[in-house]
Amino acid sequence: MTNWTKVCAASDVPENELRKYDIGDIEVVVANYGGGFRVFPPFCPHMFEPLAVSGMLKDNVLTCGKHLWQWDLATGEKHGLSEKDMLFYDCKEDGGEIHADLSEQLTYDWEEEDELDDDDFFS
Image 1 (cartoon, rainbow, N blue to C red):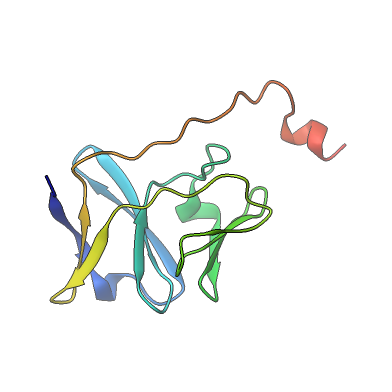
Image 2: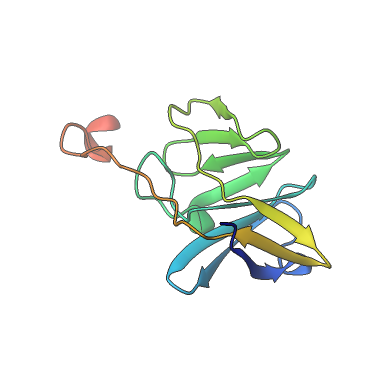
């Protein structure tokens, strides 16, 4: 069953920007990539990095600022160094508002970071 929920006004998210919203118990990020909008969980699928803070959006491509993983928001496909797919909520623009299907919360399974942390990576 589809649960279309208003997330924000389309005008609240300027082109090439990201905004985080709390909708009840679900946190989402809305991205305006110029050709449309995407709604997704607030963290990078690679590690627990908040995309609304470190994410960069240019030419349809979302880049996580922590390890430079990228996704093309127009197609939803991995780009560059990415090894995991982004999860996206179904969304639509209707009457100047962004609505997302929040009938199920989307989450990632992150790998344990014990094997290699950022300090080891850059040593």
